[in-house]
Image (cartoon, rainbow, N blue to C red):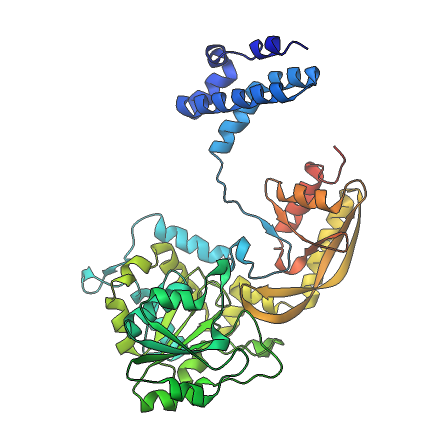
Length: 469
């Protein structure tokens, strides 16, 4: 094999630029983009020739150079973030974007953000307004709080609250509540960034009223309660409830801050789940400031929602950090629409995707699973396809011990391995993300939309995902 001859057979750049397909790419995209793809793909080809001992394969790769350049140019103009089908059964899947927003809400948001809006303009007064004004009254009505605002996530909420209320002072918190959230971010580290000194009391599994009382000094600026929404400690445990902390805080004229984490506005126990403390309950019990996530059990966009006494919220609104942590127009618009649904619990459960998935009857989930299985069998896919019971989970650091009865399509491929099938499903035009167990692909129908059923079956057939290659 004469590799020098093979190298010389790679078309020169000026020759490639004369190619009709390349000229069409330049007309569609730009000369700079196409030139970049030409250099990248010819470099890859040279490296392949250097490493390969298969002359026929090398010649084949050279013949495919122009189509490869076309693919490379197309990839440059294809968004990396794409829609996926969530077949994992994890409703609040952090890696898949947590709470999905309803189609109806997105249509309304699109109409708002595709032009100008009164984001920070008071239409009645004809002057500058607050972006919080669009949902502050709603939050107060729903929760019983005096005032409200929102920042870009709940870690930001904690940062802003402590920076506003306790910078330069001390904040007392139980050791059992020093949680780590996603991406190795930890409550103590967030607190440190706020300029407040952390005072740990109690032990991992037990904290008593006396622990808080003895930790309060003239430097104490606040008492912090953190709801352990992403894990549970069971067994020999004890903790101080917010009801018990309120009298102690009042005695020392200190605010009580509660970080609820996931945050929920309806009692999930009505729907057969474990009771999760609601935001309204925290306010009713006397918490001065409460914060929680927007994209977890609330079912809205990513945001850190802060509610509580007006004097404390006003302090936060004036904090210079607020500008750096503020929400954008997409979040403000979506948050208002989602919160409006909560004016009627029946509407919220029906129209907010997260709540609908959590509360959907098993019989409805089973219908979707059986429909998907029928379409897959009709496509004559080379696999064993059966519908079986499974369990979904909430995810997203919410109700970690909760499992919801569900139904799934179980796939056992006949010609390829489960690992290979799972990888191919991830590489589809609309990736399908399953979970795997016992050498089986599991597609949990609870997190698969009705409209996605045909898409899943069609893609598995069209792209011959289960065939040997």
